[in-house]
Image 1 (cartoon, rainbow, N blue to C red):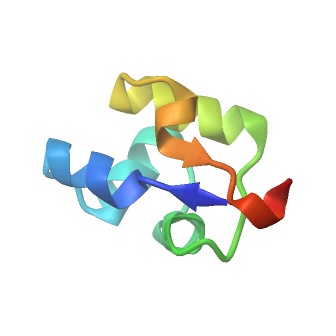
Image 2 (cartoon, rainbow, N blue to C red):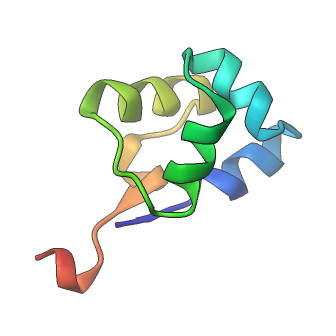
Amino acid sequence: MKNTIKVERAKKNWTQEDLARQIGISRQSVNSIETGKFVPSTVLALKMSKVFGVNVELIFQLDEQDW
């Protein structure tokens, strides 16, 4: 799964720690999600969507191999 978390963070000038605080997880978890090592739960993906103010589909996209 691809994601645009780093891009969305940059738009808000947030660090991984800033985002982690906003959604109630660790900075390490944000890093794992951002680098594609961990796929977030639906609830966590929706929290990110809300704090960024965008649709969840803008942040997370399936790769062809995910089909």
